[in-house]
Length: 420
Image 1 (cartoon, rainbow, N blue to C red):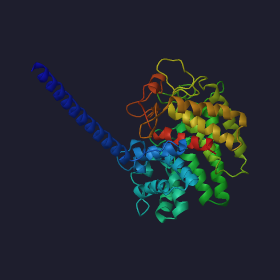
Image 2 (cartoon, rainbow, N blue to C red):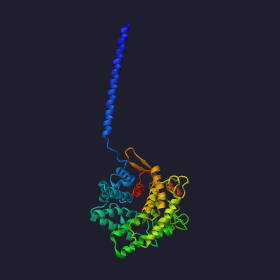
Image 3 (cartoon, one colour):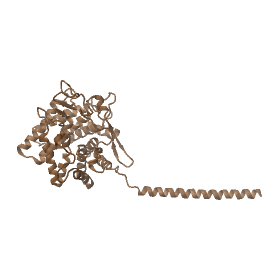
Image 4 (spheres, helix red, strand yellow):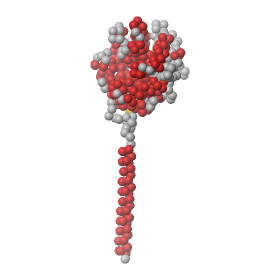
């Protein structure tokens, strides 16, 4: 009897066990099928990884900032300069790929920022802020493509700012009306490519010649007043009056070589050369400035990473770091100069080392393919409230963030130069 009972128990356990196994197997299969179904229905990567870096970064910016006015973390449509740098890259990616989504992104910026009567949203000419000219580059592009009257009116307003922009005694543009007597390296990029491109498109004869001479003079003046002859680097800014707390009482110069200020200056030169007439006598001088600039920049390039530091000439000082926006700007300036024949081909090695360094050390890619550029200095300036004293400690303690348009834009432009 015990034997029979034991046998029955064994069979019961076996049957129960097989049932449980079957149930588990069915559940597992169902889960697997559901997972497979979910995976199949998932949309593809937001940014395909088989594209070139230029397009991957542009798509990533469009993913982060679905409207172009949002670029560089703007909370509402406002006329500011970082959007234009990314959109400069977008124009060139569109020219290369012909993908309408890129053109629509650029066009949307014009539609959102320029009213039908040509008024520019949030822009105030009376501030005479040279930063505000940079986004005029987007309007020059859109007017060439679409011929909308509102863009022409807005462009004419920006050109009027140049006529009224306050200047130093010898004729250099002040950076802003609220910063009297001050010339910043940043301002050359903010104003001169727009000034040159506008002149090429709309100004003729003696007026054009006068404008081109004025543009070249801005670089001549900066070379004279902001260049450190020992290193070949240029200081961030110069106060003609020598009254600012950040300015040397002897020279009027700020105390440090800020990476991005030098980056702005290099980009200004290579972009102005796109529009300055081939026969203009100042062209050779600009190219000579580019050569000495590139030599100085390469000397302070980190030999291991290929990157550049926030404060260029103090790599080992406490708090300094390899900074993304300046690194991207230097790479763009040098590789474009090589491609255009302004610099010998031997300079390409430094640009390539910098570009590879950015990708290896500063780029990360999310699971969905979205590309990030890390270690960007968010902002740096001089004076203002609270007061920015231009000290080493000031520069290295400004906010650091990812995906700043002042870095992603030059990275797209640099990538396009390498992809030629």
